[in-house]
Length: 293
Ligand code: C2E
Ligand code: MG
Ligand code: MG
Ligand code: MG
Image (tube, rainbow, N blue to C red; front, side):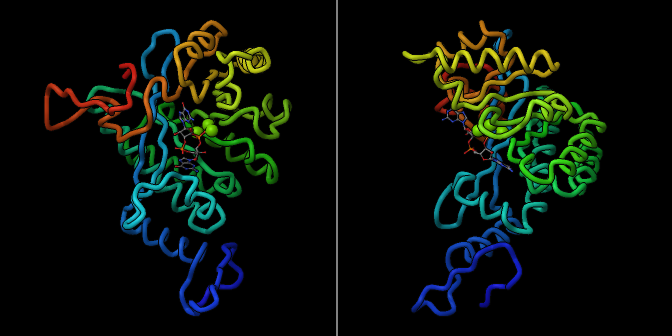
C-alpha cells in the first residue's frame, strides 16, 4: 500500500509497520468501504414547536456502525471525510437515505420535515443542487419538507460560490438553515442577504439561559431571536436539556427547540414510536424524557 500523493488526506507510516496504513490513511480506506457496505446509519432527533409542544421535523445525524469499534459519532470520522473527495458522495448518501426515510414516515402518517447537515466543502461546487433536485423528485418529497443545515464556517472562504448554491436551493423551495449560529463568522450582511429560512442558535448560548448566572446568555439569545425574526427567519434553539431552559426560550419567543430534554437522537422508528410489526407499540427510546412525537 502506498498513500497517493496530491490528495488532501494525510497518510502516516509508522516505523516498524512498514506497509500498514494507519491514521487518516486507514480511516479513509475504511470509510470508502463503509460507504460501499452501508455501514453508515442515520439517527434522528426531533425538533419541537415550542408553542404546541409537538415535533415538526427530525434532524438526521450520521453514525458509523464500525465493524470492530462500535457505533461511532461524527466527531470520530467526519473531519476525515470532509478533507477527502468522499464528502460529496457521502452527503449524497445522507440526503438519499434521509429523504427515503422521510417518505416512509410520511406514508405512516407523520408528515414531518427532515433536516440534513451539509459540509462547507459541499457548497464549493454546484453539484449539490442537482443532487437535491434529483432526490426530491425520486422520493416524491415536496421541497419544503427538506431543510438543509449549513454551518457558518461555510462562509469563511468561497463565500460567493456558497451563496450561489444556497440561493439555488432556496429557488428549489428547500429550506436553508444557518446552524450553530453565534460560533462562527457570519456577517450581518450575509445574514441579511443570504436566503436563510431558519437560524439555529448554538447550544453554547442555549445551555446557560436557565443556569444560576444566565444574564449574558439570555442577552445573546434574546437579541438573536429579535434579529432573526426581523429578517423573517424561524428561530431554533439546539441543546435544550431541561424544562427551565425550554420555558425561558418559549417566553423569549424562540419558535422551535431541540435537545436531550425532548429526545436523544435514535432510529426514526424509535424516535417516532412507530413500529411496523406491532399496531400498538409500547417501545420508546429509553432516553426519551417526554412524549413529544
Ligand atoms: P449539529 O448539526 O449542531 O447537531 C447537534 C449535535 O448536538 C448532535 O451531535 C446532537 O446529538 C447533539 N445534541 C443534541 N441535543 C443535545 C443536548 O441537549 N445536549 C448536548 N450536549 N448535545 C446535544 P452529533 O450527532 O454528535 O453531531 C455533531 C455534529 O456533526 C453535528 O452538529 C453536525 O455538524 C455534524 N453532523 C452530524 N451528522 C452529519 C451529516 O450527516 N453530515 C454532515 N455534513 N455533518 C453532520
Ligand atoms: Mg445541524
Ligand atoms: Mg447545530
Ligand atoms: Mg452544534
